[in-house]
Image (cartoon, rainbow, N blue to C red; front, side, top):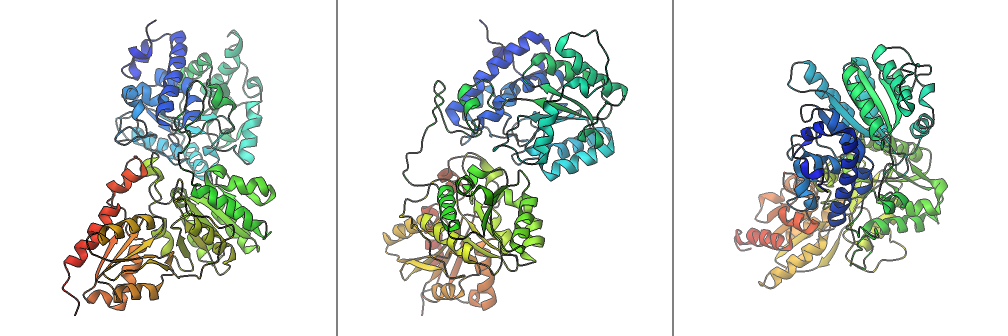
Amino acid sequence: MTSLLDKIAGPSDLKSFSDADLSKLADELRTEVIEAVATTGGHLGSSLGVVELTVALHAVFDTPRDKLIWDVGHQCYPHKVLTGRRARMKTLRQEGGISGFTKRSESDFDPFGAAHSSTSISAALGFTVARDMGQPTGDAVAIIGDGSISAGMAYEAMNNAGAEGRRMFVILNDNEMSIAPPVGAMSQYMSRLSNTPLGALGETFEAVLPGPLRDHARRVRALVTGSSASSGTMFEELGFDYIGPINGHDMDQLLTVLRSARTRATGPVLIHCCTVKGKGYAPAETSADKYHGVSKFNVSSGEQAKSSSNALSYTKVFGQTLTRIAAQDSKIVGITAAMPSGTGMDIFSDRFPERMFDVGIAEQHGVTFAAGLAAGGLKPFCAIYSTFLQRGYDQIVHDVALQNLPVRFAIDRAGLVGADGATHAGAFDVGYLSILPNMTVMAASDEAELVHMVATAAAHDAGPIAFRYPRGTGTGVTIPDTGTVLEIGKGRIVREGSDVAILSFGAHLTESLKAADLMQAQGVTTTVADARFAKPLDHALIRQLITHHKALVTIEQGSQGGFGAMVLHYLANEGVLDGNVAVRTMTLPDRYIDQAAPDAMYADAGLTAVDIAATAMQAINKLPARV
């Protein structure tokens, strides 16, 4: 039997398919996605949940003139298969391959890049206004999940779009499952909508239509005639015409509603589409996380590949350590933004459910909520990925640092993160936190240091404090049961030498020690120090390193303007840079780095042991001999 997928060069080919063939195509597409992700790993459950919706959208709308904007973009794998990237799917999230998210530079069918949530409606409104101002673009369709639509930015966009009254479409993909089960009043509201018969939501019309299409046609009738529904929804109060809920796996329903809405809509429309995350693949459907993010796996069994390392992940070390400390301190509470397992806070929650707060995809609220908890006398640990903490920056400045409230920020995924690529890199937190008055900023060089920093944060009541640590497994060092409270602003010497000093901040300490070994082989002895703190800096340690070495090299897993910049600022003000000591800073380059294995990404960034050694050698070779 000829594959329907083989007949597709692009979405325009779907226009000639019958509705029955589109249903068959969806089945083939689901199998294709499963087989691709089994090879590469990635976001499987979310993509399986939108297979039928993806086919229907491309069959009804005229892409790429019409703009499909996938919120987050982690559910875009079926979209990529249909838009000319089928042959490259097994390069997904690999070095030199296609991105695991939508990406403008990758395809004209990706009109807006995404990997963080809740941006799609804002972007869709932007395209809509551009169209109405004469730009050559068609309809804009935002596809957003029930978890993402709970974020404040989505509300802001819907409020603006409803007030504008322009023709645009929002598809609410309601699977009652974001990365973790969605929380809050919005989730409960949508669950009630999902269980409400359509006939109770719309005016009666088109009674001659058969069975399941009748209720949906009633909603379309209400849309195009402007007649009011018997009971309005929140979306209607915001200015949207509401259609739904509809079955997102029923091709007939999807096609009927999308065609009618596209033909007749004049203003903003929200189509509430109920789907099942992981649909059509039993291991995903029965898994607690619906195979949200998976490593390579066996298609037949669903068994995922396991890491060959025996070392614990930094995330797990954090979760276990916080839980142990919290057993001795009832004031400690945990906060995360829809990422309990990703941040290790699920470990804490299992032990202390009444002290754990998942605020949903709402980092701004989470940070200020933590500030309120701290002002109320508790010890909040706010665990958020570096790249997502950016979303709550004003709250960090205004609600935490300005008021000097002792919020503890546990910053996971610091540095480069591998297959998720540039969108999830934790590149900027050192810079954006270290510039804030009252803030203390730490970075763990290994798992044992992370344990000490959790203990230090728990004991620190003088103001806000942050500690960062990378994704993945640690170095395999012995992990202490209890941490030692560190002296604030004090680093440590790890290895002593006399020619070059390397001052490492964070998890590049191991690479710094390797660089010292390389230089030792060339007769150059190196002092390697672990800064521990970017703020406050250990001035005494820096003076010691400058005084007794020909060159100082700082190294960090962050962007320009971070730890190295803080060291340079101090040295410049001390007048040290006027002398004959070479100072070099090594950071991530001033560009975004695409996905690859973390080691390959750091090689691309010029931050390997070889790079560190070369930088140090170049520095001392340019200097005159010390008198």
